[in-house]
Image: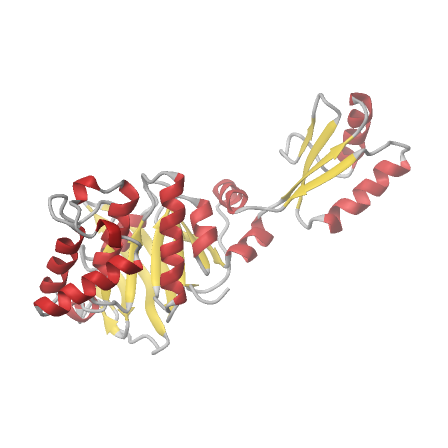
Length: 336
């Protein structure tokens, strides 16, 4: 393993530079740069196989890395892995809690493992069960918990001793929409308390809802990083629908738009069979209004105009097609 030791600034909880990781002769991480300031939430977004779990496993000291440097709360991963382990907590994709124990028993167990006295462990367990809205289920076995309840308890177990940095590896995978919403509320509460978090996810909405900044990981590389809003502004398109009283008018409008560079071949123009033209524009009404004026000048009657702002789905698919890479430095999570 080739490492270059460095100490991150006090305000930076996580500082990753040019991180590489080989597993079984295959390079999984190919020069990852990440940074999270104190109190920030960074979401690492990527498809299955992008390298998200490998990244979490390296940063949480579970597997070695090949080269680069990692600093967590001022501790260098290459020279001080114990210091890193003492500064972090990890909630993986699969619950680490015991199905045969009650909620209280699980948290007390983790508290005792962390060195708390029996009374302190019980006090902390009661506090966390209340905080995570599990007080009524404190004395129930986990085998009677729903998937969402088990997931919340799993995160609570990671916080028995509050870490400097919390890793959440695909926290809502397998949860129903209601449980996912409840979990998101809990994670946002942690952010409001000043917790620093790195989460990985496949859910674009999850990244949009929770993260200060989003890093898109593809094939072991960060190909884009920014705030969700900036990513949507840079890579996303507004989806516009322009309605006409008949199909013939829509066809004529489509021809006008084609003359201005919008084509079905580029997937930014669709002329429907019901008198509706759909198109993608980068800059919202700033771009759309001149097009509407051109259509109006041709004597066509517009009956309705609708516009949907860009989403992270648009960003993700645009990046997947282009393989673009943003010029920003390390992927840094912080205030929106």
